Length: 168
Image 1 (cartoon, rainbow, N blue to C red):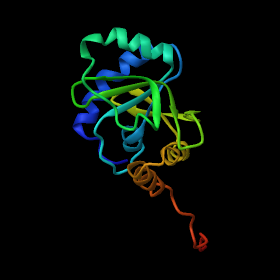
Image 2 (spheres, one colour):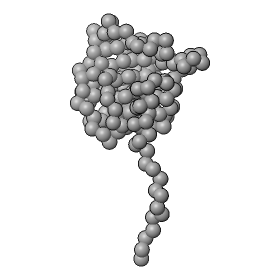
Image 3 (spheres, helix red, strand yellow):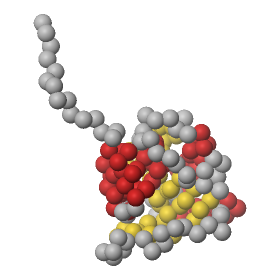
Image 4 (spheres, rainbow, N blue to C red):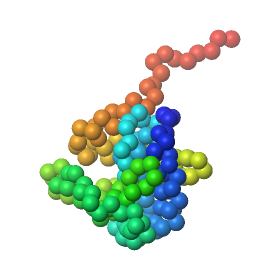
């Protein structure tokens, strides 16, 4: 596994316990932070958290004093959600309730697929599996997401070309 940058570590150790306490529905970390947690060598500028719309409301109320009300997300024509950005130690956190994306074929709800738990200093951080992260990143259709998907693909172990034999 690649080294977890200190800023990501600090943000997650403060963020994840609150998510476990305040979210009623399943949630997960997606984007570059999730890719890094699985070992991909990618830069992480923020922590993207996929939650339900109701849980987004709960988090917005709970973290009201941390909310960055001046932030405007890019790609608003491509993505929509019950969105808020929060100031956390280390990195900003972006909460996306009921995230949908549109690549010109109409709005589609993002399904994280299968989740796995990544252990971090005693915390269980849910992230989509490697294959589901690749699917998600490719579905977004942006260059930066395709680069992250490629970094994740490099983590797959190639099948052995040589047969393994034992000599007795």
